[in-house]
Length: 248
Image 1 (cartoon, rainbow, N blue to C red):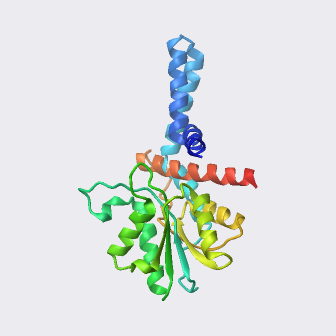
Image 2 (image 1 turned 180 degrees about the vertical axis):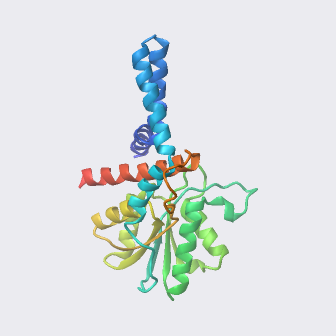
Image 3 (image 1 turned 90 degrees about the vertical axis):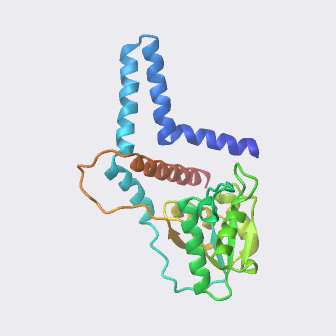
């Protein structure tokens, strides 16, 4: 299981923007070294072309919008018992406050889950996510943040073993059964998460947060590292969605 998880991450790296560009650039350098000028030129131009494309704000925003426009923000009208907040990255640096232990996306997920919980009397928040490279699970870290802003411990259920969205869905299935529940995750991740949960026979109600899309500001925009990062996020999700379709 551990090897399979590592292999999946390794393959994903090489087909996402950074890994793809790095690989093409490395091949170009290799051909340059062995004096295959035409091949070197082709691979180097392709790597720089993709770097520009993925860093170009209108293109990155297009990739993001196609994901985030699929599910609008939650209207807070339905009342359910369970609210499932999906995991995200974290650190355990003791020199930092709890508000800095969780990434921006993870913090927004927790905050949205807490807002929903306070609007629904008697609801329970489910936190999932494994420890990553730390000795504390992401579920525990998210619960600690929720507790710090007033959520009672008996209003939370923690599952600290799931490593990916499918494993998170499986542990939730054992708890919620046929009941509808609210699913909280980043807007870019929501289409893939909904597909995974529904494929397992669950009945999630989407409550996306952590939006990245931006209003159109024209085509005369300079490439930026922030746009490249958004392209990385989007392509990661497109690959995941494609993988889910191939498996079903």
